Image 1 (tube, chains in turn cyan, brown):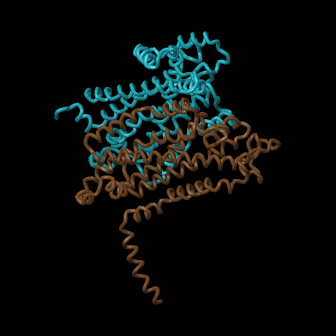
Image 2 (cartoon, each protein chain N blue to C red; image 1 turned 120 degrees about the horizontal axis):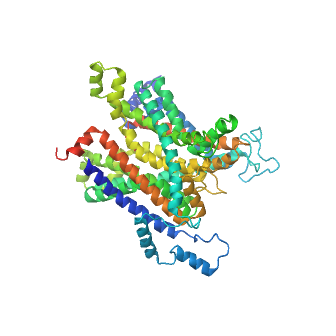
Image 3 (cartoon, rainbow over the protein chains, first blue to last red; image 1 turned 180 degrees about the vertical axis):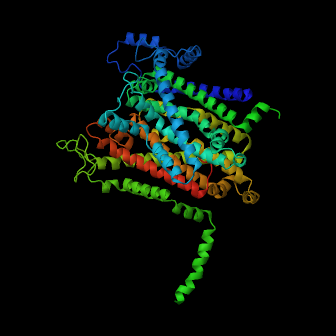
Length: 312
Length: 299
């Protein structure tokens, strides 16, 4: 197991390195300097600014300077908000996005697994068609459409829930979390249905039933563990999707999180902010892919014995 | 009477022959799947509408009527008008052209790169295969959603680049599917026979491997189109995709959200168009997967 983790870690390092390098040179290749927006800047002021942001150095020196800053966990100052570092901005947004993502994932797992398992118990009946039809709607309804529609219905027409903000009015976390989680609930439902259907046709399930175990134990104890492996393996990619989804959801609901900062930085051409956020988010995504791979391998008994047994 | 008798055996023979083919079987199965057929028909209607938009659209794309302003659906404007008095139906039709074009063209790019890459890796095998698939593995781990946003920021919001960027993301799974198909086909006797006959690898791939690997590729292609369209709409919604004066469903939804309190039809109709299309494609793709009996083609 340890060897598996280490080998996956070693695979992750070149990926992160490629992300850093590609992002750095892409951002530097962008047309137009970051200070073009300021109307009239005196040449000496511009030079001083460039020196402050190390833009006067040759490109490769900038790159190595950036790498050494990164190695110390320093993402540099923001172009747009002088005096604030990218680190500060990121860490002010991180808890908000993490909380939003956590609720969304919780909704996705609870609703998705329940619906999927429920559907798999009686395939090709109404108990299967209704949740799976709803799941299809969830997949086809993008968050940037679902969010505004929820706002329209529950926020504006019914006036049940607040329509924007995060943590300032009670209940304002409900709509964004549902908006972000809905599509993943749908995917989780489909995956857990497919996974459960496969497991439920296995011999050991028939054995468990034959020895007279009550159905809830057969499903809960024996089938779930294997049937949910695809769901666990999906969590890594889902995490990347949740982050991208947070771009939209945080924009719609005006939530001060990482996603909104990223989109704003993109519009403001705040290059250090884009660079820092990309590197940070990418590393997070790579890390979560790793965790979900390891978890899925651990849940799969065949893979696990192969991994921990080594020479067996 | 005589002509009928004469033609009957021929018909039977034809049926017997076609009944044996995989495609015939798949078609029979697909036809029984109501959701898939419904999806296919809806999709065809949308494609037809997109192709014929310049002739079908009730108003011209630029036509404004500032006196009218935003009006709800009426006899003159079936889906209402926006704040500039532009006909929403016309907007949705022209936007659909772009959305569908992005979906199909970017998927075609992905298909071309992925199939070629996977076929070469699977066919040549050995060290070439190892290196090529290692590249796919590394690219897989890259957070592309973020990269596409970055690309659009850095190089301006250019439609051509959007096609390429999306296509470049979606080819990876295609390459993996193609490679595993080719690897299993390579062991087959008819491929060995073709090799011993001295056919070039390119000819073998083209004539034997690709036609036989077509099933999973068709299924995956059908399911890639909606995810590409979703990606385009996502970028356009954020203002990073299609730019005015061009339009797309994602962009129309973006505008619709701004005024949804007063004029909800500006959000609902483009949203409905996008969702219906995605629905049709997903149902058709699922139906094709069942009909062609393709397993594990997703992920």
